[in-house]
Image (tube, rainbow, N blue to C red):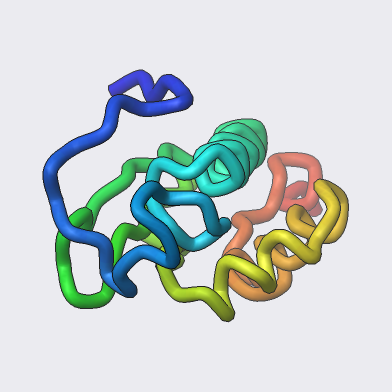
Length: 120
């Protein structure tokens, strides 16, 4: 499935409610900062070899990104986007720091060795 941004608004409820009549905070689905952050995350995940999908809209815990790491078909990335603390944390990372965090927190040593590393 191809994701495009900004996404069309749905009628699902917001996990934390809204701070104003329209979404405007980085943790409020469909606000400009939320959509920009989600697009950045999806782009970086794709560039790193993940297959991201968005789910959880309208749930108590809120929307999330779930991404399978294509090298070994495990779900190794799962992150809630509507939690204000989580949204602020991700916003505090530049692109390089976000990549580093994904590797350290989600991939770790699960990256399979390259063919060169397997040769005796």
